[in-house]
Image (cartoon, rainbow, N blue to C red):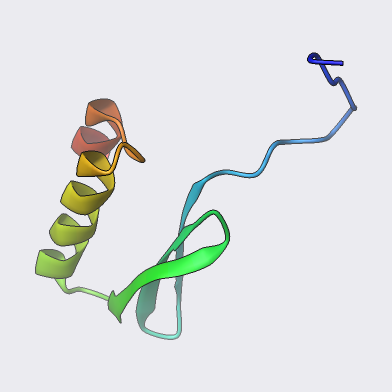
Length: 65
């Protein structure tokens, strides 16, 4: 039962970035990890570095942001 194949089903992402109402939120496994005002580049960079150092982001992901 290791290969589950349900049409249209996608596994939950462990890291999500949600933008709205002037805020950017990072959710890790569905729980809020960080939140800051849109446009704050310093906080964006901090979140990327922290997630990478925790093993939740890849080097490829960090360079594509």
